[in-house]
Length: 106
Image (cartoon, rainbow, N blue to C red; front, top):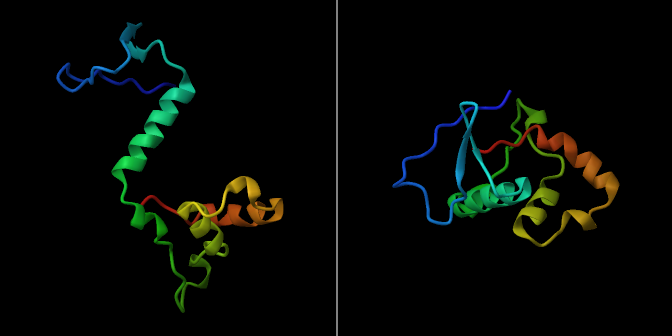
């Protein structure tokens, strides 16, 4: 089921925003592709998040050994831009997938 969103007040909508439509009681954006919306959202997140906070990873302690990341250096290099995911060997990507469950946005 789609989440129904109320349109923002006119004073909040930027001039570059695409037109909103009301279809069957649901508001939808028209005239834009899904990948364009996703890219705009990721750019917005990139602008609003402090970059240094991205490099703070969960640390393992004496009592919670499984809390740390196994491939922390891999994530650090990718987030800093010194390594691209396409250049990482498949086995390393598979091994890092388990670490994704330990990451959070906070």
